[in-house]
Image (cartoon, rainbow, N blue to C red; front, side, top):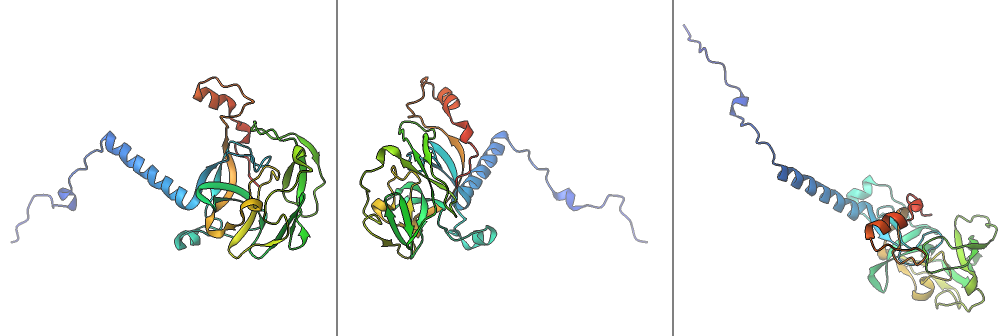
Length: 261
């Protein structure tokens, strides 16, 4: 007759040691590591934060605007990310952020005017692309370089057919000789894999008219929307000397969420 043990059968659970509770230090360290990894992923493939220090894009982008840049939209990603995220070609009228050709450490933001193979010519206030006037709505303003706020509009011309954005002309600079050496004295052809870019504040912009073309490899991405706007050097505002108070009181919070287009 077979004998039967009265002991309970052993299960796998009998060989598993109870987990030791995590210390507070370990929990914070893990959360910090996860946050860093996610931030690095976003900054590398998805988005980047950029600040505008000059008025070359006013009134569309103000001095002191901080905005996000879509880094994957133009297809400059790894094969894996390219399959997961939507991409498209760069189009005329896009506002791009790019590394300044003569100093890659500096980021510039301008509007794409000429695509590879286009012929561009600037005559006074009108831009011609492939022999046709570019449809841009022109607004005359009085530029005050000491403020981050929108410049007073003096005159707004009717929008021509097909215009999707505004460009701003400084009333004080009208009648002056055109500056620059590219597309000003005659038409230029945009090289392959390059772009002709100009600022929306046409009389206050160091752009392709002065230094030439933007290589495709220098383009970081497409400007999205403003998340914060603050210029500590704005002379129109009184500063208390307390950095926290100045930021809270003098940030242009109405700009937050403004789409750049």
